[in-house]
Length: 478
Image (cartoon, rainbow, N blue to C red; front, side, top):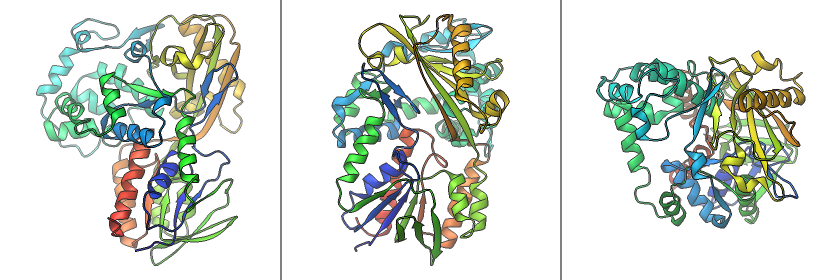
């Protein structure tokens, strides 16, 4: 069977990955990738300075772990980017901290630390771990991250580990975010094994079984935790763009901000400035909010359900100082929501990827993350927020939290509107509702991107691959 054309809507990492995996299907005659921006890759963007310094505008690293992480490493291998991979410093990787009562406090680095008394915890963490091992599972369809870990462990684990972790992962409030959707491995561990600790341990042991990738084997052997590339994460985007552009069946349209969707008998016609395409299948890789607008006339119920997935704004500010000024060699730190601060946390770029500091003088580079669920509370309306406000907040945090008194010699401030979806309690049911509506209408559409079933780069790439696989199978391609 020969398919005339498929359309990929959105040129972020999900759209690029979907396009790449579609090029592996020879039965497809034409692949059209449409993006509203001039820059493909979505929020992934790296600035490379002549001195060799590399700053990230969006994500700073990619996690290694699980089936999704292994899949990304396999993609890196397929794109022949292995020589560009840059694992994070092992010493920094295992150094995670929180800011509490005016001090930076270490979180446990390994099993031995669970038996120690360490602030801000009033008891050794082995005690709530033991509680989880023996506590009966609850028959709860969905609940917040905070409630889940408070119930299975204790309030301190929820307050000082899960709350700041949630702010780091999705810039969200752990008392609102769904454990089932954001941390399905923990949710499923309780359901299947009756214990988060027991279930997650089994998941880790099984995550790399049967690897057929030399890069995955290397990551395991060298105990990678996260990685980047010598020239920043944009290397992955550039590699994907180069690969799909080399395929004559692929046409890429950028700066396409005026898009309309029409539907007939389950198939979509996409109208854009450069033309109009009848898609045998549509892979939507744009945020749920953006797709909602396009679906308002096609299927109002689906449009309404898509609006149930809110987005938050993020601001980041990378500061560069002269000299070695970090008080600790760590990955960085997070700030619990109970602490009065305008930042969510800070990444110690110099400690994680010292190679990105570049040449010449010794320097210190850190990135402050701000906003999220607390954007309007701390910074007001995004339309009136000025970059200098975020830069000043980042400098203030460096002074108060790290004791860095000198002024930065360079800064890179980014404001990312509607950047991170919030998987609030009930998100799983919303996604299921969307799937049911697609099936009911026999829509030839796949919903991809971070709005639905995973926020990370790994999730986006893996979900794109699986969607293309399902499509190929439905068409009898293999």
